[in-house]
Image (cartoon, rainbow, N blue to C red):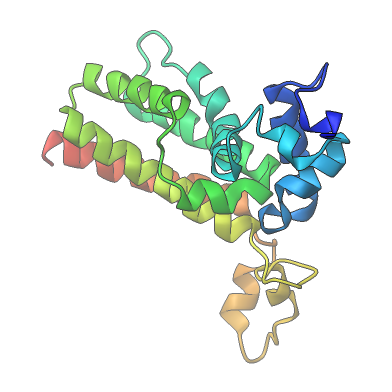
Amino acid sequence: MSDRRARPRAGLTRERVVDAALEFVDEHGVAALSMRKLGAVLDVEAMTLYHYVPNKDALFEALVDRLTASLGDVLPEPGEAWERWLDRLARAYRAELLAHPGVLPLAATRPVTSRASLGHVETALRVLADAGFEPVHALDVLNTVMTFVLGHTLAEAGRTPGAERSDVDSLGALDPVEFPLLTRALAEGARHGERFGFALAALLAGLGKGASGG
């Protein structure tokens, strides 16, 4: 007789499955995620989960979609310059990534293929097209900014496997005699947010000059 837990379970939804997967990844990392372990968290057999997500790859896709979902709400305000809007979009994405750093490896390495995420891309391209960009250049601009956000946030949140603190934090014990300038530069800590804002402003300024042909 087949185990009843391998069938759809009352009260269990795709949303709950993704929620549980996100909580698991936040705590244990994406490498530790398996359908068997996720099933144990939800008190069902792994096979039951396939009624809600067809495979592990689809689950990964759903996790990435969850992080990009809120970006659909970051729309330009009346009269807002595209650079200001894209600044807000980039900061919102960074905030989502930092809230769930376990999903960062997926967001950084998986191409955008789901209808949900592609819909956000289409919306962003429409905003840039309304600002005067041709579709191909609009995609270049969006890709440049989002790639920067992912790379910066990976470095900001990243840790060497097994390390108890980030690689940047480990520079706090520098010898000030051997590295006087670097010690002074790091005296206020990593300053991730300030560095992110500085680099983003420079990036957007450069993209703006490129768009205007300057």
